[in-house]
View 1 (cartoon, helix red, strand yellow):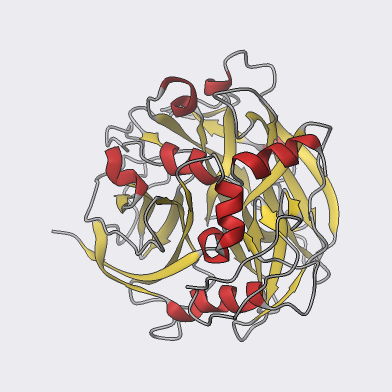
View 2 (tube, rainbow, N blue to C red):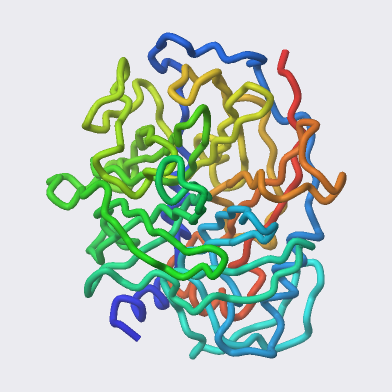
Length: 410
């Protein structure tokens, strides 16, 4: 195992503590206005109610606890999903444990089962769910190899799009964050670049990886921007959201950014344009007044864009809140009504709330009606000994799911 991987096993894994704290930033509402922001049907939205999704949480517990193989997923964070044309769902994870889980299986994700200290840790993984909602296989891991010694790739948002504009052939495009091992405060890696991987269909073979935004020459790591925490497709464009790591260096909030790319061209660096507050240009600029963490989720709901993030202040370790806008560039309004999903034990934090439009909610068996599946990751707040604690109770490093019902606010 590479030395930096061993270090991360000693200090905690994945997006973990970094995102748990970064996501406590406040999203302000003074984003610049621009023509065409008022979409049809746009209205204030907020979470009216939520409930734990035991079926989906339990499915990841079942699959992770299955000891039939030693090279498959037993836990991970950075949870993202994309529905494939044949009905399968590809789940993408950042730091991932493989190996075998010991102890009794637990169907509802509250297991006290454990993995031993030799469990392999890889930087990323892909897990395939069939059309019936059952997890079937882990793709050869890591799915995306390290780009260079001391660097690794974390997959984030993905979408199915034409291989090229107008093509009938579809591929999966996956946004990747490249990070480089660094010293404190960059114990979870220095932000380095945004890449786009192309996966074949239906085989999900990695065909290519292209760097679309190199940030390695930006002197201040806290100002480096990584794109792909979430994306939205609309009217022939893919809107890709990102953030910087301002919080890591200064303990202040991070800034939000958005780019757009013509459909079918995510893997072409020259096709990317970045919102600078008034127009789409060649350089990313922070959305004026938007202060978020480096991981959040945006989803369109009946003409309105809804953003999920962790709440501000200390509530950001336990509480999810939301904002709304009529355009990907804002202005954003909120925060709206928040909620605190269940945590498995004391001393852990929730982070990385991600919407999963590709997954029908368990309550109704289908999406729509203002209902949406949302995941959140959990990890220890303390980095010292975190790896041992995660191995001692595998439920502490697996995604958990809720179904939220959105309604018009006011």
